[in-house]
Length: 629
Image (tube, rainbow, N blue to C red; front, side, top):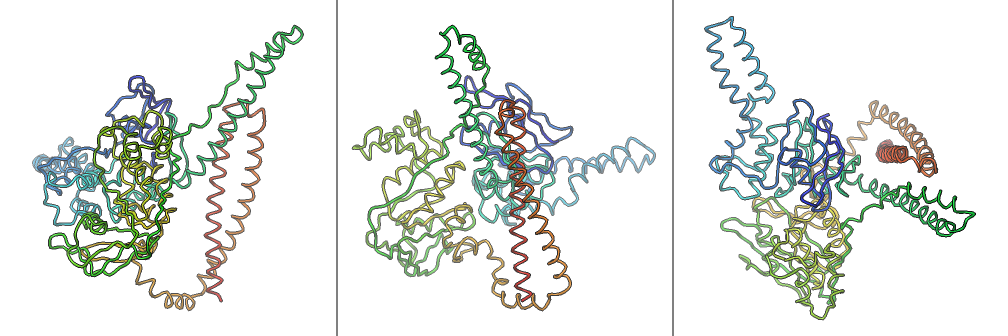
């Protein structure tokens, strides 16, 4: 075990953030930490890294376990260049190499000196552990993967942008290869190619990974467990984020049933007491019921987090069909061409994503399309009836309170109407009176979306709309944009949003623009040559159908039968567990009830894994039958 949290607690004044937190990290774990903003995710990471002390409990590391932490706002030495910054990761090994040179000279003079031989062995162990003789290869591999081409290696860290510095800190941390890698929002400032590379690196990482992220696609690709920070504690779920969602829903449903049953029982006991306490013949029985009521533990109802946000983007004016018309459009930044003589028309109801590596001018192109910048050549024209709404990547600071931002624009609204509208975007209770100058980036983004919903545009230009948002707001926004029947042009790196919208993608790279019909085509863009030869490949498959294929076909058939039998057995076991959980004897024993519920969760999870395997095997069997024909 690398790390164990035991009854961990942390408060800031009277505000309790963490309470009785119990969890553990094993080697090979890939754990995603999720929770609404303000639930204590970063506080937890600071405790684990020793930057903050818990008020109670302990975070116990295994013997010799090393820990590396990527925090959101750390700094680099501005005087070192990119390559020298990366070389710092090998400091223990470089010092060992320097010491080795001295020791080897000493050993040449004293060949029988045992203490020198032992120290040389220790130095070799440090060097081998870090694979330091391959230092240059490792540095170049990680720098290229993290989006630093060779021409940037001599740049000083002080002249890099904020996003580049974050990527460089992450790259150096990866080279240090700690046993436990702790990452706070690692995909911020990364483009799609770098995120893909990082995901593959982390999946093959030899230690454990503990990561706070609001990127659902990343959590699905990397994580094998989810820690949900909720109600001041951690709930652990097996699988990635998509596997966590039904488990959390089932757990909430169970907890709500237990709560309702306990409340109903308490009400019946109280009713009996009220009716019978004053009657001499039933006083003793009523007093007995009172003692039962005093001992009755009512399970808390599941906490309702401010995450289920429900809002829509709608419009009143139906525009003409051709809504954004580009004729010979050319866009340049300095000597670099982003778009050259593009003819393209965005029709009413279309959605178009603009994507590409960092620095390729995506935001610049969007500003040309929404009219904030003049094109370098050609023209852009909005069709008749267009009513545009714009969301910029960095929201400007504003004066006044949150409620005033809406009320000043819509003075005829009642306070109830304004507050009801803001509640749809996560502003509840006293939050509507917060000073806008004190809002975080995510809070400002939510406020702007609340304004956009009231503006009712039929054409929206959105620049990185999911930046700064927590995972719950991202999900709500993704659903709202998918349901939007107006026209949408947006710049994004959010792969889950791209996948959900399933719309065309205009990809900018190295001054070239390439269209892809959807996210799947974009994701498989490197395999385009293979896909163009599908007919040839399928013909070759038929010719190669022989002994190996027949053996595999028999294996698939046998495994399918075994999986079907196991699914049936698990289904019967689930029914048994559900009956046991509803047994009054089990309901009275909270420890036994918890164990039964955990066993039910594990059984359902395993059954779902088998269902997924059955689908893959069934598809493979169909392909065999098609090839056999």
